[in-house]
Image 1 (cartoon, rainbow, N blue to C red):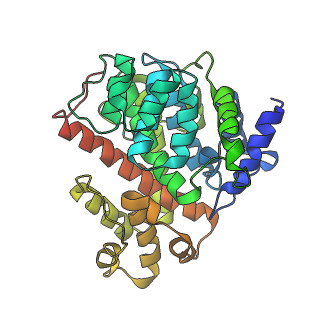
Image 2 (cartoon, rainbow, N blue to C red):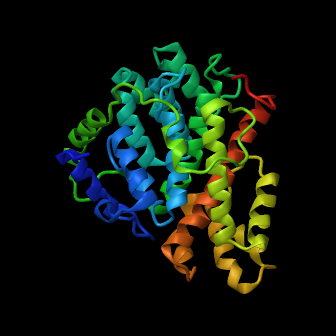
Length: 345
């Protein structure tokens, strides 16, 4: 595929990724190259939230697989409904970068007023009743029933953005636009981005499955391609966690996630220290990073990352394992609060 001038310009935004250096498209080989080709073909651009995973090729493939098969591939739920969930979850998680990107995409699929209402505090004013319902659900209204036959797809989108919001908090700033773009031009650039990302015919489900070996634990609410995609991705993320973190650190994070009921951790990082105090000193820095990514990713800064004397691959594997584990728990909590062990498909 020959990159268009717009794609080439968007590739330059990879410089916005902090803490790690993504693989440049011209240097990509093997699995990274295969993923990059699918991303540009099916999403339209090599977006930094995907490319930031590239220091770990298997994790890159896993992150792209859940994004493609939940949000981008065709299915029963419309792309507008999926983008409404992606945007609303990102609002709930205070991820302005994701809100800006997916709000711009959504604005090309629904009315401008409805798009503004979904990313604002006026979901009740959304004119389309189906979009209004799924956006309200994604913002945390557990009284809303997801549309029959679409629940698994919309849960998959919510899961994916619980994951991506955490990763974006760590590795990207508040906007996909370069900081040198003046505010006077930002509205025009956002409009152009929305037009560029406006989806056409949805790609066929399942193409990302070839990137990862089969296996892993699929969520109980998923079936078909989604179950296969999340199972394969789960296997990759678990392997990444096993490579980058000790069993004691993984057990600590997993135990804390089992106890977590969704409450925010507050503005201070003081809650982390009592949890890591009994770990061996060499493991404390990795544990701090994993805990913060899982529960309060916006609190990760250079001091947390720089304390880990590891390469880019390990940084991506620690953060991705913690983010995926937390996303899985966040979706479990939504089902528990709604009084469902399984959600109808």
